[in-house]
Image 1 (cartoon, rainbow, N blue to C red):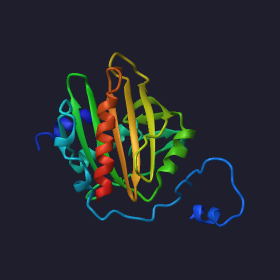
Image 2: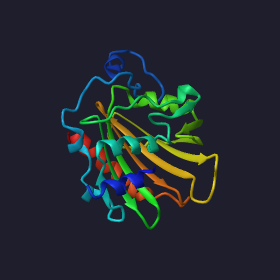
Image 3: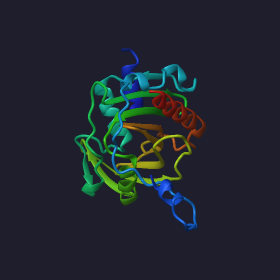
Image 4: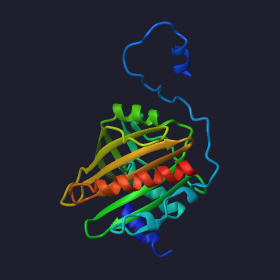
Length: 231
């Protein structure tokens, strides 16, 4: 079941200081060290940090998913590699995700005319975004079997979005079923960021193969990150 299906179901219901003290000049541009551990928390509940459904672009009327639907949708956003799925190589399995109150919050906007969705997902995590980036670099092509349906998931990293967050990344993903057919290949474009222990992912998903709505994706990602930063 796709994210759009679940949306329809839910609708009814210190380095600089050291260099400054040195007597020598170091050539090159400064590069921020990649975060290795998450130590700070945002106290506000995730449900209050999601963008309001009214903040979604008008062409994507949105709903907030209840916990069980959110769990199913999260699996779709991982290319089907969520709970209960078999993933090869095994090292490419996503970290176990927890669901329930203040663990995962998802809102989905659906454009029925284009068969596209745009989804905001907030999760609590002690894992820095850089760990996910490292995994993605090693997992460009992954085989997933979920509920007897086998697919190939291909992922490519794009330049990270420039926004004020602890870390950001961008990716494009295609989910191709072994049993193909028109309208069955799933394409996703995702922007992700992390602020303290809250990870923000905004994903545009379509089955039509049409060019992604990057304007809507950028707009909603910016709103989502800003809302989390305000706490």
